[in-house]
Image 1 (tube, rainbow, N blue to C red):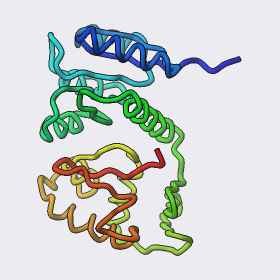
Image 2 (image 1 turned 90 degrees about the horizontal axis):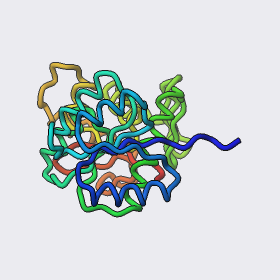
Image 3 (image 1 turned 90 degrees about the vertical axis):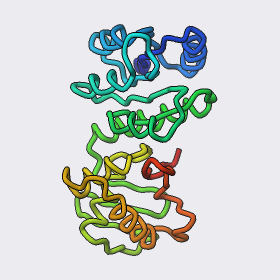
Image 4 (image 1 turned 180 degrees about the horizontal axis):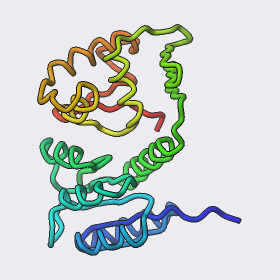
Length: 231
């Protein structure tokens, strides 16, 4: 018996973009639910509980940021924003609101499918609660709080370790400066991005072969950081 198809909810008011997504995603083996407005999308999300949401920000009845916040009040499925708004601040606002990823229109089918695979894989790992993480020569045993690089143990400070495990928890997803500061230093960290730069630099010196050209700990300029996945 074949596995049920992965269900993706598309909340998008542009008919041409919906046709593009319908053709691309059904060809990729996904099942689509479509909504043209924010309210339709929220109703469909509650009724159908999709595996992933593709969300436009420029909806006719409500801004996509509000939709993201309302979904995050109860939903855990990945949310990928697809928007013509390409400014850094737009990306930061969407990610801070609870989106998992952000694609600026226009984008290609290959990139879209890759982002969907990463988001779904991360959601599956999160639900499984996997205590082991590996990427290239990097191995992290979350149960034992042990970090190894090329079979050599790496000693991290408590904050360095917390920063790394926060990135691991959201591997493949861009985390804004504010999100990282809140998760690593607590809700009162404010906008102390200098702390983040210092500790990210220290972490790169311990984990990257060439800290100036990182393979694992990637910078998203003006937005935040992302732990690369094998994708």
